[in-house]
Picture 1 (cartoon, chains in turn brown, orange):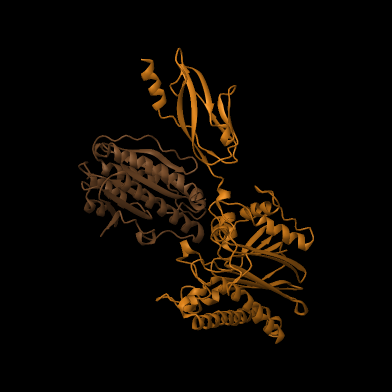
Picture 2: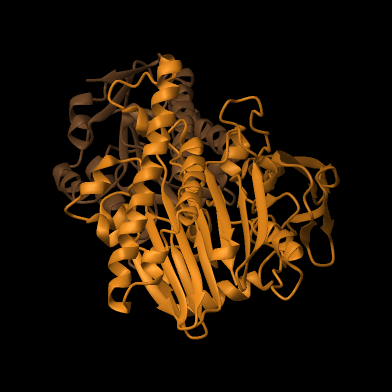
Length: 213
Length: 412
C-alpha cells in the first residue's frame, strides 16, 4: 500500500514552555482523533513527530494513525532548526519508500514545521541544504508569534503562514488546518491517484493564519 | 512522603497500546515496568463499557473493543496503609475503517445517471464472457457516479465477438458519459461494419497482409468513437453552457476517458485477435505457461502521463504513433482473456510491470479461485450466470488505499 507520510517538526525550545507547548500537544491529539474518523486518512496517512530544542529528536518514527500515541513533550533549551532539517532528511531517506519497477513507493511526504523563534545553530543552513536535496510533496512552515522570522522560513519553503500570538486558540487553528490538509491530501491520493500540487490545492487557511507572501 | 508518592503515580505518563473496534485486543499490565511496584491493590473501572475486561491471571486488559474514541480508563489503586486513589489512563480505540465508508447512492435523476454496479455474461463464439463493473468506495462515500463502463456484442452469424472497457477520468465532470459512449459506440460501429461485410477484407487477405488491414479497420472504428463523444460533448455544451465554464478546458476534456477493446474470432488456424488501447487499462491473454499483454499502456508515472481517447493529439502523436495502439495476433489457444481497469490491477498487481509476469498471474488466479481474505471464489466450471454472480462478489474485495471503480471482463 502507498502511504502518505506526514512529518511534523515542532519547536520545543524554552520559549514554547507553558501554554504554547500544551496547545501543541492538545492540537496534535485533536488532529489524530479527527483523522481517525476519516476513512481515507486512517488508511493512508502515516505520521512522524520531530521535536527540536537544543538538539533535534525524532520522538515518533513514521507511524500509522491507528497505533499513533502522542508522547508527553516538554519545552526547554534553544532552537536547533538546522539540526531538525538534517534529521528530517535522514528520516525521509530511511522511512519513505521509493518507487521501483516492481513496486509503487509511498506518496510524496507532507512536512509541517512550527517554530516560535529563529534558528540558533550556527550552521543551520547545512541542514537546510540537506533538506533541499530531498523530494517532498509540500512543506508548510508556520511562524508562530513575533519572535519567529517568516523570511528565514521562506528559505525552507515557499509556503509560509504566520500566527500573531502563540496561544491555544492560534495553535489549535493551525492544527485544525493541518488536519484538513492531511484529509484533503489523503482523499486526493486515494480517490484520484494524484498528489496535492501546492498550498493552493490545500484547504484555505483560517483567518488567524496569515499567508506570508 | 506517601502523599507525594501517590501524586507521582497519578501524574505519571503511562501509555497503553491503542485498540480497534472488532479487533482482538490485549495489553500487558506490568506495575514493575510502570514503576508502580509498591501498589498492593488495584482494580480497573470503565473497561466493560467498551467491551474489555481485566484478566487477573494473565495480567492483561483484553477483549474485543466495541466503542471507538479516546477513552478515560480508571485505575483504582492503593499503597500500603493508604486509602484507594484513582489514576486516569487514556485508551484509544480506533473505529473499524470499513465502518467509516458511507454508501450513498448516486443521483438516478441525473441526465448522465448510470447504475452503480453492472454485471453481465454471454456466450462468445466457443468461449464464455463474464464481466462486472462496480462503483468504487470513494464514489460511494461521496454519492458520486461510477466512471468505468463496458459493453460487448457477439456477432453470431459472423463468428466474431467484441468486448470494450473504458475508464472515465476522475477529474472530468462527465467522464462517466465519455466512458459509456466509448464502449457503446465501439459496438455500434462494428454492428454496421459486419452488416456491410467489411470483415471479408481481413478474412480473405493473405496472412502477411492481415495485420495492416486489420489495423486500418480498427483505426476507422476509433475515429468514429472519438467523433461520437465529440458530438455529444458539443451538443451538451451548447444546451448547458453554464456546466462548461472552465476557461482553459475544451468541451471534450469534460468527457475524458480511456478505451480498450478486443475483437476475436476462431479460425481453423487459431484465434485471430484484434485489440486497441488508449490509456492505462490492460488487455491480457493468459495461456497455460505464458502471459501476453495485447495493448500498449499509457502509464502515468513512467510514461509521462496517461492518455485519453478524447485527446485529439493521440491521433497524430509522433512520440506514440497511433499505429502502435493496435495489435493483431493469432493464438492457437488460450486459457483466459482479461480486460480490466486500474481499479483491479492497482490493488492486485501494484505496478503495470507485474502484469507481464506469469508468477503474478498465478497468484491472481489463485485469488480468483478463493485464496483471499473474504474467501470469495469464482468457479469457472459453474453455470455462466453463477460465475458472473460470484465474480461480482469477488470484486468487493477489501484493499486499503484502493477504492477506485473496478471493472473486470474475463473471456474463458
